[in-house]
Length: 123
Image (cartoon, rainbow, N blue to C red; front, side):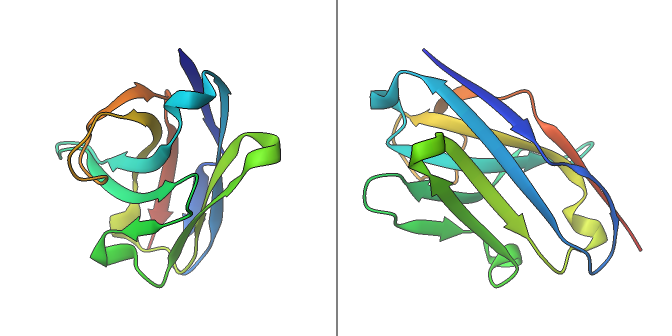
């Protein structure tokens, strides 16, 4: 079992920045790949960024490349998402996920999910 707790969400104006954190605990063997997803009202959940915790390979959806950075602190068992140059279309609930089950890392094929943290970007 893995427990994930997100934090760092909030309300910002367009162009601002936020850093999301995801504190992980439990079975480390299940955390080979960790990811951030988001879901806006009325929309499907979409993968934003993912990282392989061993090799450090990172993946992003096109709309956030150059603006968002996924990183990890293994000593703190924490995953981060640094979000810069935020846009109103980034408004969503953001979720941390791990326990990759296969397929594409930005598809929601993960066993464990956090409760989410809300990000609201105003124009």
